[in-house]
Length: 164
Image (cartoon, rainbow, N blue to C red):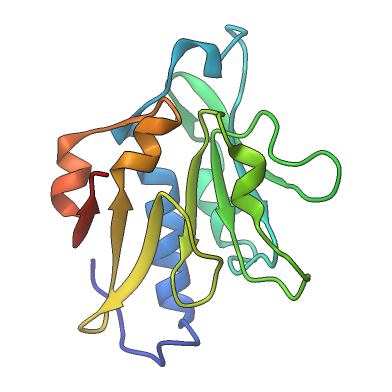
């Protein structure tokens, strides 16, 4: 987890590249309930809502990759469609009034992720900067409430774990 130091409110392109890689690499350490994949040929979907801080970085990370034997796709969501069908939802910043992207995932097995300094609060995993490095904290209680089980290996790498 090497990262150049940058202003807390403005992540560097290296930090964004690291976040994009983390976003993809979190998945093998999360167990989704069987109903998260109702069809055998269902894709693994990483969704973005709000401003997309990654540009082409996330697409480059997942190109030709598979997760749990399924092709990985990136989908931008918003409006009426919402996060239906998403397995991971990354919420970027937004200027929308009453922006609360995670309320649409209530009761659904969707891993929510955000950048604590530049995104909405309430994500299960939040990126933080610590000593010039990209790190993350995990709300394991929220993940379990949505039917997700996060591996102890990933929990062990977090700088903070909320189990409530």
